[in-house]
Image (cartoon, each protein chain N blue to C red):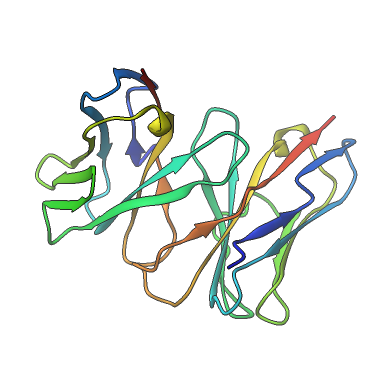
Length: 115
Length: 111
């Protein structure tokens, strides 16, 4: 079956522009996560949804970052007034259930470059 | 504050030999540990996991060992194959689903 898909795969933005990154999780997966991976680092947690409810947004670095999952499937991560330090790969992951041990399946990521 | 550390940025091994990747953690509340493998331009792929109530878990060529007293885990790959060449990330969680990742170890298996 289809895995997690993300679009666009690559995004170049000028400093100050707003961007929107899309995640299509595996069909039927309840949980959805966003992570940010800077160059040479491991992924860092941004936010977590269970269905349409955003249960944890403790990793969002500033109020310029906003995520939503209005119908409990597709999710969008929006970054307003992008800065150079926002340049990173943004990874989306989904898991079937609500348990902490449910495997998270990752998408290929969106590489964001802010000039 | 890096709660999960992978101190070896890279490891080179010959095909057929054992690869041992190491990971240390500082948060004693972590109770679930995972290894992910990542190829270039792809997302991380789940490899193997272990709960804190165990000290070993095997899946084919892959074995993860957990030493809670030392806050250390390791991934053994036997025998190593060229297709295993990738970046390996150690990750941990506290029972909630948020994963905390290490910085990764790049494994190169040469024929």
